[in-house]
Image (cartoon, rainbow, N blue to C red; front, side, top):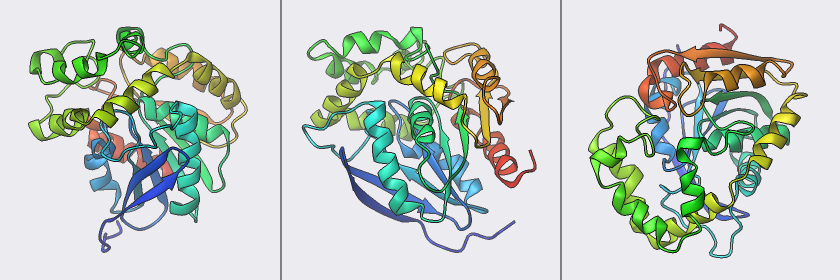
Length: 285
């Protein structure tokens, strides 16, 4: 196993939607991680701590509600514009090629990015995420409606201060099994204190549509690169059945289940996730 001997690098890119922070650690083949709604790149920390021993691990902080860098005030925000920003980022951060890894809403962005075939993309890894007609999942679909109501994002901010509300199925109760630390919750909730974070989150939610995921799925049916669906073994939120259904229509896709986990398996089972990614990329899976 390679020894990591280089420090973590950080920076901020300028993209079509505005500024986007990035972080890179480790040496070797590049793995690019995309996080989901109401999380940020720190949600990958435990997975990256392990994988950075063998790979160069790069994260982007997407404007999905727990971000710390403002987008342009007039930026059009949708999963498609985020995919465009990711394509711009890989040109600067991944000059020697990369594996694209996404979870939750970041998995949607990864699907759209992948079918555009950015130069250097070698394979795709999708953790539990929205697919086809399941965007957003039914239990969270109220967020799309609420985003059209003035002040709703402020109400969401205040609601997520409550530990009881966080554990409800309509919040994080069906997304993560283990109890997150206060530091982890603060990383999720504190950014919502900023008006422009709430503005960006509202834009993203109002722009959600199954037309993006249905189109991506159709194009993935001819996607030629190896694809791993690394999916929580559950039918809650992102059903394992959805992973099998899409993978079966792709030429080089397979499904591997993550046991004892809900949708955010990189938080529930980071060791299993990191080892599965390592085996997949190295061809030992």
